[in-house]
Length: 382
Image 1 (cartoon, rainbow, N blue to C red):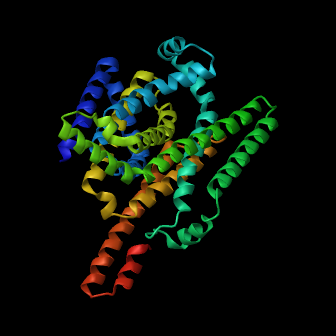
Image 2: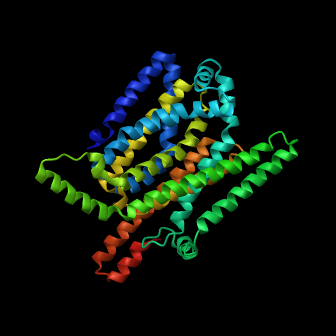
Image 3: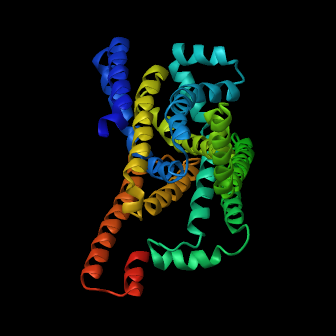
């Protein structure tokens, strides 16, 4: 099971590290290894959240997530994305941007750094909306009940998460503008960039998340109808493609996963520049890490880990909220990537331990012959 799930990750690791040695010797080998670990540590919460969505998708779309999705994640976000950012911000053609990345690495790094406010605002708002919609939802199982119970009641107010996100964006852009004005106004236009990018992130979340939710609500009805059509096709001898069988719901959930992965990868891509400005080494290291995140996602789904450790998803969403705040703060202040990684690891580790304690308490309650109400109290949160 382990080899089947992580097999391709092991292969990509071996090929990537070998390519690094051929490209830049053992120094490059060390850099790629460090980048791989950085990506995995920053993206573990991504895997947990992905697993919660992926388990709703059929086997075909899970395979698409591991094939086409990996190509998008590795080559799109880790290789093409930084080049596109440079092409847009520096008003260069993609070919010139690639040439710049290979021939003038310092200038390339500077251009990506200059684009960071827009990247951070877009990704920060997208991730913040994910966290807010999760925390305002009324759910049977609550991790930190003293926080989640009152917030679930507040969540009954329509569009509350959007209002809070917009307030955060306004405060962030205003703070950035004030800071720029105090320094002569040289970067005052970037306050507008932050505002526009943040709104774009919010719109992206609402469109993709809204479509995903709409089709997810219709998923059961559609699957039943498609099952009937499949049976009819078998009787008549006609073939139906797997893509049609997968349904619109799975497609939009896949699209939502890819946008989610893109938002998660922002901090990894930007953080990678603290280690190297060589785009080849960056793509190798972050690509290897992205493969492990994909494999870990599938492993969590197939093992039913989220069902056994029910607070893991909560911890991952709290980590998302922390990452959203960190991204918005980094518009003006530098935050070490180690801190970013540790926050996520601590929150997920805490939620895992809480899940273990809950499972033990449930087992003990059942052993003592506790009533269903008493078991429900133990089960619902800490």
